[in-house]
Image 1 (tube, rainbow, N blue to C red):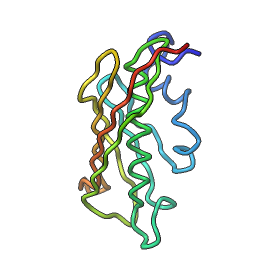
Image 2 (image 1 turned 180 degrees about the horizontal axis):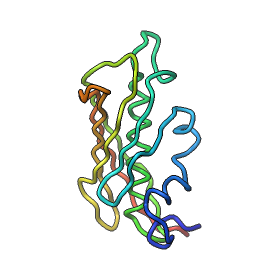
Image 3 (image 1 turned 180 degrees about the vertical axis):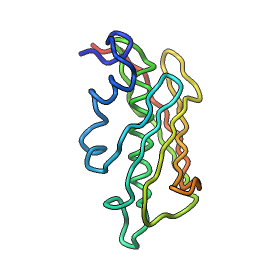
Length: 142
Protein backbone atom coordinates (compact mmCIF):
# COMPACT_ATOMS: atom_id res chain seq x y z
CA UNK A 1 0.00 0.00 0.00
CA UNK A 2 1.74 3.12 -1.24
CA UNK A 3 0.34 6.38 0.17
CA UNK A 4 2.94 9.14 -0.31
CA UNK A 5 3.10 10.96 -3.63
CA UNK A 6 6.90 11.08 -3.54
CA UNK A 7 7.20 7.46 -4.62
CA UNK A 8 4.76 7.93 -7.49
CA UNK A 9 6.13 9.65 -10.58
CA UNK A 10 3.14 11.99 -10.97
CA UNK A 11 2.31 15.53 -9.95
CA UNK A 12 0.62 15.83 -6.55
CA UNK A 13 -2.63 16.81 -8.32
CA UNK A 14 -2.52 13.71 -10.56
CA UNK A 15 -1.74 11.56 -7.49
CA UNK A 16 -4.64 13.06 -5.54
CA UNK A 17 -7.14 12.77 -8.39
CA UNK A 18 -6.15 9.15 -9.03
CA UNK A 19 -6.36 8.26 -5.33
CA UNK A 20 -9.60 10.18 -4.86
CA UNK A 21 -11.01 11.91 -1.81
CA UNK A 22 -13.40 9.08 -0.97
CA UNK A 23 -17.01 8.10 -1.58
CA UNK A 24 -18.48 10.80 0.69
CA UNK A 25 -16.54 13.58 -1.04
CA UNK A 26 -17.71 12.19 -4.40
CA UNK A 27 -21.36 12.25 -3.24
CA UNK A 28 -20.98 15.83 -2.08
CA UNK A 29 -19.53 16.95 -5.41
CA UNK A 30 -16.10 18.00 -4.15
CA UNK A 31 -13.73 18.75 -7.05
CA UNK A 32 -9.98 19.25 -6.68
CA UNK A 33 -8.74 22.39 -8.45
CA UNK A 34 -5.16 22.63 -7.14
CA UNK A 35 -3.02 20.22 -5.14
CA UNK A 36 0.61 21.09 -4.37
CA UNK A 37 2.91 20.63 -1.40
CA UNK A 38 2.01 24.20 -0.37
CA UNK A 39 -1.80 24.02 -0.52
CA UNK A 40 -4.96 22.35 -1.75
CA UNK A 41 -7.91 24.09 -3.40
CA UNK A 42 -11.27 22.44 -4.08
CA UNK A 43 -14.85 23.44 -4.82
CA UNK A 44 -18.16 22.04 -3.61
CA UNK A 45 -21.71 22.89 -4.72
CA UNK A 46 -24.27 24.19 -2.26
CA UNK A 47 -27.01 22.26 -4.11
CA UNK A 48 -27.38 18.87 -2.44
CA UNK A 49 -25.41 19.92 0.65
CA UNK A 50 -28.00 21.98 2.54
CA UNK A 51 -29.89 21.68 5.80
CA UNK A 52 -33.72 22.05 6.05
CA UNK A 53 -33.65 25.88 5.87
CA UNK A 54 -31.84 25.71 2.53
CA UNK A 55 -28.51 26.90 3.96
CA UNK A 56 -25.22 25.08 3.37
CA UNK A 57 -25.02 22.43 6.08
CA UNK A 58 -22.25 23.02 8.63
CA UNK A 59 -21.32 19.36 8.36
CA UNK A 60 -20.73 19.83 4.64
CA UNK A 61 -18.07 22.44 5.43
CA UNK A 62 -16.48 19.95 7.82
CA UNK A 63 -16.48 17.17 5.21
CA UNK A 64 -14.78 19.51 2.73
CA UNK A 65 -12.19 20.60 5.31
CA UNK A 66 -11.42 17.11 6.57
CA UNK A 67 -11.15 15.73 3.04
CA UNK A 68 -8.62 18.38 2.04
CA UNK A 69 -6.63 18.40 5.29
CA UNK A 70 -6.32 14.64 5.59
CA UNK A 71 -5.37 14.17 1.93
CA UNK A 72 -2.75 16.91 2.12
CA UNK A 73 -1.37 15.50 5.38
CA UNK A 74 -1.00 12.10 3.69
CA UNK A 75 0.96 13.71 0.85
CA UNK A 76 3.24 15.51 3.33
CA UNK A 77 3.69 12.35 5.43
CA UNK A 78 5.63 10.84 2.54
CA UNK A 79 6.08 7.34 1.13
CA UNK A 80 4.86 4.47 3.28
CA UNK A 81 2.96 6.79 5.63
CA UNK A 82 -0.61 8.01 6.00
CA UNK A 83 -2.65 10.53 7.98
CA UNK A 84 -5.41 9.91 10.52
CA UNK A 85 -7.56 12.81 11.69
CA UNK A 86 -7.52 13.23 15.47
CA UNK A 87 -9.13 16.67 15.91
CA UNK A 88 -11.23 19.05 13.83
CA UNK A 89 -12.74 22.42 14.67
CA UNK A 90 -15.05 24.58 12.56
CA UNK A 91 -16.36 28.10 12.95
CA UNK A 92 -19.13 29.09 10.53
CA UNK A 93 -19.32 32.84 9.93
CA UNK A 94 -21.67 33.34 6.95
CA UNK A 95 -24.58 31.54 5.31
CA UNK A 96 -24.98 30.60 1.66
CA UNK A 97 -27.97 29.18 -0.20
CA UNK A 98 -26.72 28.75 -3.77
CA UNK A 99 -23.62 28.52 -5.92
CA UNK A 100 -20.34 26.97 -4.89
CA UNK A 101 -17.90 27.22 -2.03
CA UNK A 102 -14.14 27.02 -2.39
CA UNK A 103 -11.89 25.51 0.26
CA UNK A 104 -8.24 26.54 0.51
CA UNK A 105 -6.21 24.25 2.75
CA UNK A 106 -2.75 25.27 4.00
CA UNK A 107 -0.42 23.60 6.48
CA UNK A 108 0.13 25.40 9.79
CA UNK A 109 2.53 22.84 11.32
CA UNK A 110 4.04 19.62 9.99
CA UNK A 111 6.37 17.34 11.94
CA UNK A 112 7.16 13.63 11.80
CA UNK A 113 4.12 12.78 13.91
CA UNK A 114 1.56 15.57 13.38
CA UNK A 115 0.17 17.81 10.65
CA UNK A 116 -2.09 20.77 11.40
CA UNK A 117 -3.95 22.51 8.57
CA UNK A 118 -6.23 25.52 8.28
CA UNK A 119 -9.02 25.46 5.72
CA UNK A 120 -10.67 28.73 4.71
CA UNK A 121 -13.98 28.22 2.90
CA UNK A 122 -15.39 31.09 0.85
CA UNK A 123 -18.43 31.60 -1.36
CA UNK A 124 -18.61 32.79 -4.97
CA UNK A 125 -18.35 36.41 -3.80
CA UNK A 126 -15.14 35.73 -1.87
CA UNK A 127 -16.87 36.01 1.52
CA UNK A 128 -15.53 33.62 4.17
CA UNK A 129 -18.22 31.16 5.25
CA UNK A 130 -16.26 28.82 7.48
CA UNK A 131 -12.80 28.41 8.98
CA UNK A 132 -11.59 24.96 9.98
CA UNK A 133 -8.52 23.55 11.67
CA UNK A 134 -7.69 19.87 11.45
CA UNK A 135 -4.95 17.92 13.20
CA UNK A 136 -3.80 14.62 11.69
CA UNK A 137 -1.54 12.02 13.25
CA UNK A 138 1.03 10.79 10.73
CA UNK A 139 1.63 7.04 10.89
CA UNK A 140 3.67 4.40 9.15
CA UNK A 141 1.91 1.82 6.98
CA UNK A 142 2.38 -1.62 8.57
